[in-house]
Length: 379
Image (cartoon, rainbow, N blue to C red):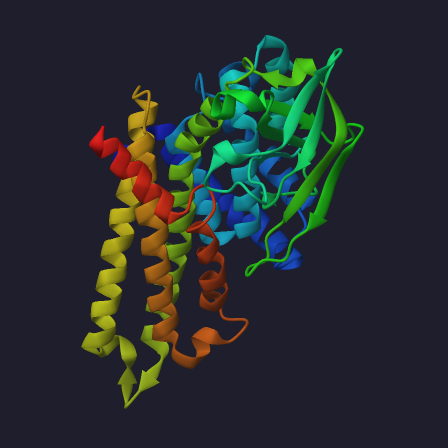
């Protein structure tokens, strides 16, 4: 894919690869599969300057605004080697990008240095018990009260909760207006009435929780954009980050392919390595082809965004849909090539098999991506 990268991005790829091998992998082994955010890993990402890729130039980036290709490069390389680091990097971006997009001068001056330095961990609070794919159905409400909003409601499946420090919350400021009454509000941990909630246990270990707001008082100054722009904030945020989910899936699938090739070369059955059997060779060929197709879709979306295309809704949905579904198939075949060992705890493909399943659900299920793509085609 290097033919799409500029020199800075080629160097970034090498930098992240080296960071994983030298600094992050030992921490990943120490942390293991966990549902707690590792501040040690976050510090390494921050010190390496990776969080600066998520803010505008005036706060430390080398580009005017965040480059989608660069974010995809980082996410692919981290997912390939260091999944805990990949999740922290991804959510630091997903939770803070609404501030970069819609924050006023004061909000950016307050929050962007915290994003870039990693001093605070950010996340996005969108999903609720009764509102997943149907964003307009959210029930969490913010009511004006003096210089504050009083927030009440429940969120669920919020990555990095309850450990995150700052939550970009999508909620309703005017229930009578339906989807036009949705707004974005930045809630800092420690606000009176904010309960970061309990941790959830998922199929694959993942820091995730269910924050609760009980008469939570948040300064009106933390409102992003104008009241009623919440749906716009959420959709533009997802437009950017859905293709990065695809990049993460590509990274995992690459690891699975590498493991399958390595195992097929050393596993001997009926007197020769299984890599010499045509049935295994065909599997590897299909896996590699799907992987390249997925990678191309991911970086096409990033390239178009970075080169001035305002909306990449269809391209990012295609990237997310195809890459996550293809990665599931690739990892499944890698496990099949491992035979019985593939389902044994301790083998990397078993872990990947559990981890990839989440990507087909979060930031819009595969079914929702089909609807988005179809709607764009039929307009």
